[in-house]
Image (cartoon, rainbow, N blue to C red):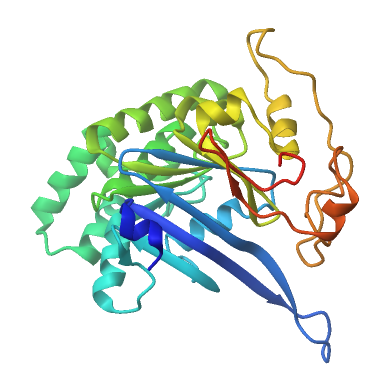
Length: 327
């Protein structure tokens, strides 16, 4: 177990999580590895929100799938209250299902169109508890009320609801087993702008009421600033900057974070910054560049960046940054 766990036990701690996918290039060719996640570490405290941000393909959703064990890590460690969550025994598997739940991005694709809402929401209770049918229904109606759904919706099918209502149903399903941690994978990106604020405010209210901790995966930094306590910026499977949301938004220091924030719309002209345009495309994870993965698009890159890979370094303001130029 790592030293950080011995000193102070967070609710959830990931240590050097990795996920590699073998890809065959031909019948006799040696498989190559896609390093979708290449050594990510973080701590999540009870009642806090960790936002994971970055461009498409940076490994955000892969991290979410590893945390919920939809996929198994290639390497690394995962601890819940100091307990190894990657053990394969039945007790640990049951605890994982109860304590970590996920809300998917697409509310239209995450609900079975052939089942009524009551049946969808009762399913986790049928599988994981010994509650009677009456107790299950009572629990479902209780959670539906918490997320703003009326009792008569219990007997309706998913196609009878709007996108915002379906996402409320998906959130309710994630809360059925009373988890401590909810992984929210782009939970509002598929919704109309007018509905996003309602769903975000609902999630924040539920967090206060139920003591939930969120791993909030998003590419929308204006949403992250509103909901997060901690921010982890990822690029090509690695964390490049991490810290409290105030520190990251007030003084972003990694060139990639600066570029992301410069593209975020701000209402106040005083808060707006000069747009930093990234040249070129995101490199392929099949053939990442040598040295710092970001150097092919970085306006500050030096020869050292092309040869050496920077490691995360702790700074006095509590941030961790992987960049030679910041040093």
